[in-house]
Length: 76
Ligand SMILES: [Zn+2]
Image 1 (cartoon, rainbow, N blue to C red):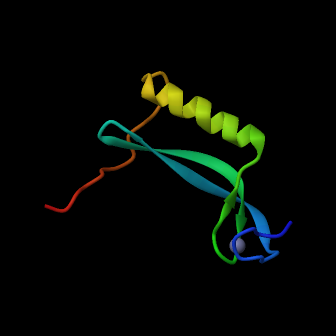
Image 2: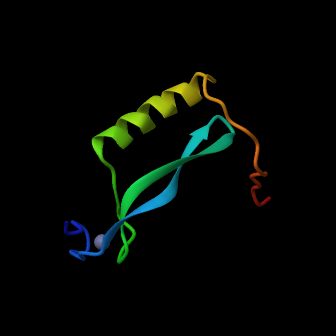
């Protein structure tokens, strides 16, 4: 597999996090995706895309289990 962005060929499965904004909160969803080691472009398979779409709608309905792991702050 060749990266469509940088044409590099070093693409590896990697544990990473997707970030969703839910009202004033940020929710991190752990996922394992293929990541270009040269430019960082992420490649999602169909199953991961479906999982993320379902997870996003569950989060927006308040139907997903989440736990607090820290604070999000904004500069004043
Ligand atoms: Zn790349």
